[in-house]
Length: 239
Image (cartoon, rainbow, N blue to C red; front, side, top):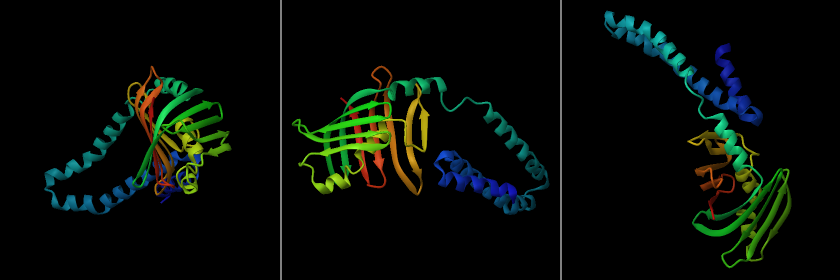
Protein backbone atom coordinates (compact mmCIF):
# COMPACT_ATOMS: atom_id res chain seq x y z
CA UNK A 1 0.00 0.00 0.00
CA UNK A 2 2.84 2.39 0.85
CA UNK A 3 4.57 1.74 -2.50
CA UNK A 4 1.31 2.29 -4.38
CA UNK A 5 0.59 5.52 -2.46
CA UNK A 6 3.94 7.13 -3.29
CA UNK A 7 3.30 7.64 -7.06
CA UNK A 8 -0.22 8.85 -6.30
CA UNK A 9 1.20 11.49 -3.93
CA UNK A 10 3.72 12.51 -6.59
CA UNK A 11 0.87 12.74 -9.13
CA UNK A 12 -1.24 15.12 -7.04
CA UNK A 13 1.69 17.17 -5.74
CA UNK A 14 2.96 17.78 -9.27
CA UNK A 15 -0.57 18.50 -10.49
CA UNK A 16 -1.10 21.43 -8.13
CA UNK A 17 2.46 22.72 -7.67
CA UNK A 18 4.21 24.12 -10.74
CA UNK A 19 7.60 24.06 -9.00
CA UNK A 20 7.59 20.26 -8.97
CA UNK A 21 5.57 19.67 -12.14
CA UNK A 22 7.91 16.86 -13.17
CA UNK A 23 6.46 14.76 -10.34
CA UNK A 24 3.07 14.90 -12.10
CA UNK A 25 4.36 12.94 -15.11
CA UNK A 26 6.45 10.60 -12.97
CA UNK A 27 3.54 9.83 -10.68
CA UNK A 28 1.19 9.36 -13.64
CA UNK A 29 3.47 6.80 -15.30
CA UNK A 30 4.21 4.95 -12.05
CA UNK A 31 0.53 4.82 -11.04
CA UNK A 32 -0.45 3.41 -14.43
CA UNK A 33 2.41 0.90 -14.35
CA UNK A 34 1.59 -0.34 -10.85
CA UNK A 35 -2.10 -0.70 -11.75
CA UNK A 36 -1.32 -2.75 -14.88
CA UNK A 37 1.22 -4.88 -12.99
CA UNK A 38 -1.28 -5.60 -10.23
CA UNK A 39 -3.94 -6.69 -12.71
CA UNK A 40 -1.46 -8.95 -14.51
CA UNK A 41 -0.28 -10.50 -11.24
CA UNK A 42 -3.83 -11.19 -10.07
CA UNK A 43 -5.43 -12.44 -13.30
CA UNK A 44 -3.07 -12.90 -16.27
CA UNK A 45 -0.14 -14.77 -14.70
CA UNK A 46 -2.28 -17.32 -12.75
CA UNK A 47 -4.28 -17.98 -15.93
CA UNK A 48 -1.12 -18.56 -17.95
CA UNK A 49 0.25 -20.97 -15.36
CA UNK A 50 -2.92 -23.04 -15.55
CA UNK A 51 -3.29 -22.98 -19.33
CA UNK A 52 0.32 -23.36 -20.48
CA UNK A 53 1.97 -26.76 -20.68
CA UNK A 54 4.46 -27.74 -17.99
CA UNK A 55 7.56 -26.97 -20.10
CA UNK A 56 6.43 -23.39 -20.78
CA UNK A 57 5.65 -22.58 -17.17
CA UNK A 58 9.32 -22.27 -16.33
CA UNK A 59 9.63 -19.51 -18.92
CA UNK A 60 7.38 -17.35 -16.78
CA UNK A 61 10.00 -17.43 -14.05
CA UNK A 62 12.57 -15.98 -16.46
CA UNK A 63 10.41 -13.01 -17.45
CA UNK A 64 11.23 -10.85 -14.36
CA UNK A 65 14.94 -11.40 -15.01
CA UNK A 66 14.49 -10.42 -18.66
CA UNK A 67 12.63 -7.24 -17.73
CA UNK A 68 15.29 -6.35 -15.16
CA UNK A 69 18.04 -6.73 -17.76
CA UNK A 70 16.10 -4.56 -20.20
CA UNK A 71 15.71 -1.83 -17.58
CA UNK A 72 19.41 -1.90 -16.73
CA UNK A 73 20.30 -1.61 -20.43
CA UNK A 74 18.09 1.45 -20.80
CA UNK A 75 19.96 3.19 -17.99
CA UNK A 76 23.17 3.06 -19.98
CA UNK A 77 21.77 5.15 -22.85
CA UNK A 78 22.61 8.76 -23.65
CA UNK A 79 20.66 11.71 -22.21
CA UNK A 80 17.58 12.72 -24.24
CA UNK A 81 19.37 15.91 -25.36
CA UNK A 82 22.83 17.45 -25.39
CA UNK A 83 23.19 19.86 -22.48
CA UNK A 84 25.95 21.89 -24.15
CA UNK A 85 23.95 22.31 -27.34
CA UNK A 86 20.85 23.25 -25.34
CA UNK A 87 22.85 25.91 -23.47
CA UNK A 88 24.20 27.27 -26.76
CA UNK A 89 20.66 27.45 -28.13
CA UNK A 90 19.30 29.27 -25.06
CA UNK A 91 22.13 31.80 -25.13
CA UNK A 92 21.25 32.58 -28.74
CA UNK A 93 17.46 32.45 -28.86
CA UNK A 94 16.69 34.03 -25.48
CA UNK A 95 19.40 36.71 -25.77
CA UNK A 96 18.26 40.38 -25.87
CA UNK A 97 17.37 41.16 -29.49
CA UNK A 98 14.83 42.65 -31.86
CA UNK A 99 12.80 40.34 -34.12
CA UNK A 100 10.67 41.10 -37.17
CA UNK A 101 8.02 38.43 -37.73
CA UNK A 102 4.88 37.79 -39.72
CA UNK A 103 2.12 36.91 -37.24
CA UNK A 104 -0.91 35.02 -38.51
CA UNK A 105 -3.83 35.07 -36.08
CA UNK A 106 -6.55 32.44 -36.30
CA UNK A 107 -9.77 32.29 -34.28
CA UNK A 108 -12.48 29.89 -35.44
CA UNK A 109 -12.98 30.71 -39.15
CA UNK A 110 -11.51 34.22 -38.85
CA UNK A 111 -7.87 34.69 -39.89
CA UNK A 112 -5.66 37.73 -40.55
CA UNK A 113 -1.94 38.54 -40.84
CA UNK A 114 0.21 41.43 -39.60
CA UNK A 115 3.84 42.36 -39.07
CA UNK A 116 5.14 42.29 -35.50
CA UNK A 117 8.36 43.73 -34.11
CA UNK A 118 9.35 42.08 -30.81
CA UNK A 119 12.14 43.55 -28.69
CA UNK A 120 13.37 41.56 -25.69
CA UNK A 121 15.76 42.63 -22.95
CA UNK A 122 16.33 41.02 -19.52
CA UNK A 123 12.94 41.11 -17.79
CA UNK A 124 11.27 43.24 -20.50
CA UNK A 125 9.37 42.58 -23.73
CA UNK A 126 7.96 45.20 -26.08
CA UNK A 127 5.96 44.44 -29.22
CA UNK A 128 4.51 46.59 -32.00
CA UNK A 129 2.04 45.18 -34.51
CA UNK A 130 1.46 46.88 -37.87
CA UNK A 131 -0.92 46.29 -40.76
CA UNK A 132 0.17 45.84 -44.39
CA UNK A 133 -0.34 49.58 -45.03
CA UNK A 134 2.02 50.50 -42.17
CA UNK A 135 -0.67 51.49 -39.65
CA UNK A 136 0.21 50.62 -36.05
CA UNK A 137 -2.37 48.21 -34.64
CA UNK A 138 -1.01 47.70 -31.14
CA UNK A 139 1.92 48.66 -28.93
CA UNK A 140 2.35 46.64 -25.75
CA UNK A 141 5.07 46.25 -23.14
CA UNK A 142 5.56 43.91 -20.19
CA UNK A 143 8.22 44.35 -17.52
CA UNK A 144 8.97 41.59 -14.99
CA UNK A 145 5.61 39.96 -15.68
CA UNK A 146 3.62 43.20 -15.29
CA UNK A 147 1.98 44.96 -18.25
CA UNK A 148 3.11 48.59 -18.37
CA UNK A 149 1.75 49.57 -21.81
CA UNK A 150 -1.34 48.57 -23.83
CA UNK A 151 -2.16 50.77 -26.79
CA UNK A 152 -4.47 49.68 -29.62
CA UNK A 153 -5.60 51.34 -32.83
CA UNK A 154 -9.22 52.35 -33.23
CA UNK A 155 -9.27 50.05 -36.27
CA UNK A 156 -9.38 47.09 -33.88
CA UNK A 157 -12.89 46.59 -32.46
CA UNK A 158 -13.28 46.49 -28.70
CA UNK A 159 -14.40 42.87 -28.76
CA UNK A 160 -11.24 41.91 -30.68
CA UNK A 161 -9.06 43.73 -28.14
CA UNK A 162 -10.59 41.67 -25.34
CA UNK A 163 -11.12 38.36 -27.12
CA UNK A 164 -8.14 38.11 -29.48
CA UNK A 165 -5.52 40.44 -28.01
CA UNK A 166 -6.58 40.31 -24.39
CA UNK A 167 -3.25 38.78 -23.31
CA UNK A 168 -1.07 39.40 -26.37
CA UNK A 169 1.86 40.80 -24.38
CA UNK A 170 1.91 37.76 -22.09
CA UNK A 171 1.51 35.41 -25.05
CA UNK A 172 4.56 36.94 -26.74
CA UNK A 173 6.52 36.73 -23.48
CA UNK A 174 5.65 33.03 -23.26
CA UNK A 175 7.04 32.48 -26.76
CA UNK A 176 10.14 34.64 -26.86
CA UNK A 177 11.30 34.54 -23.24
CA UNK A 178 12.21 31.68 -20.96
CA UNK A 179 9.60 32.46 -18.30
CA UNK A 180 6.13 31.24 -17.42
CA UNK A 181 6.42 27.61 -18.54
CA UNK A 182 5.74 24.41 -16.62
CA UNK A 183 7.55 22.00 -18.94
CA UNK A 184 9.55 22.01 -22.14
CA UNK A 185 10.97 19.45 -24.57
CA UNK A 186 14.37 19.63 -26.22
CA UNK A 187 15.62 17.59 -29.15
CA UNK A 188 16.96 17.61 -32.69
CA UNK A 189 20.43 18.34 -34.05
CA UNK A 190 21.60 20.88 -33.20
CA UNK A 191 19.69 20.53 -29.96
CA UNK A 192 17.01 23.19 -29.45
CA UNK A 193 13.64 23.61 -27.84
CA UNK A 194 10.80 21.83 -29.65
CA UNK A 195 7.85 22.49 -27.37
CA UNK A 196 6.96 24.19 -24.12
CA UNK A 197 3.68 24.64 -22.32
CA UNK A 198 2.01 25.78 -19.14
CA UNK A 199 -0.63 23.83 -17.27
CA UNK A 200 -1.52 20.16 -17.54
CA UNK A 201 -4.37 18.25 -19.13
CA UNK A 202 -7.26 18.94 -18.79
CA UNK A 203 -6.30 22.45 -17.61
CA UNK A 204 -3.57 23.29 -20.10
CA UNK A 205 -3.12 27.05 -20.42
CA UNK A 206 -0.98 27.38 -23.54
CA UNK A 207 1.46 25.49 -25.76
CA UNK A 208 4.18 26.68 -28.14
CA UNK A 209 5.68 24.46 -30.86
CA UNK A 210 8.98 25.43 -32.48
CA UNK A 211 10.07 24.15 -35.92
CA UNK A 212 13.15 24.61 -38.08
CA UNK A 213 15.84 26.14 -35.87
CA UNK A 214 18.58 27.98 -37.77
CA UNK A 215 21.70 28.51 -35.65
CA UNK A 216 23.19 31.12 -38.00
CA UNK A 217 20.16 33.41 -38.09
CA UNK A 218 19.10 32.57 -34.53
CA UNK A 219 15.46 32.09 -35.55
CA UNK A 220 12.90 29.36 -36.13
CA UNK A 221 11.25 28.91 -39.48
CA UNK A 222 7.89 28.60 -37.76
CA UNK A 223 6.48 28.99 -34.25
CA UNK A 224 2.90 27.97 -33.49
CA UNK A 225 1.33 29.18 -30.26
CA UNK A 226 -2.03 27.95 -28.97
CA UNK A 227 -3.84 29.66 -26.09
CA UNK A 228 -6.30 27.09 -24.72
CA UNK A 229 -8.13 29.63 -22.60
CA UNK A 230 -9.04 31.99 -25.46
CA UNK A 231 -8.86 29.41 -28.32
CA UNK A 232 -6.55 31.74 -30.26
CA UNK A 233 -3.72 30.42 -32.43
CA UNK A 234 -0.74 32.57 -33.43
CA UNK A 235 1.74 31.47 -36.10
CA UNK A 236 5.07 33.32 -36.39
CA UNK A 237 7.48 33.28 -39.31
CA UNK A 238 10.65 35.41 -39.52
CA UNK A 239 10.99 38.21 -42.06
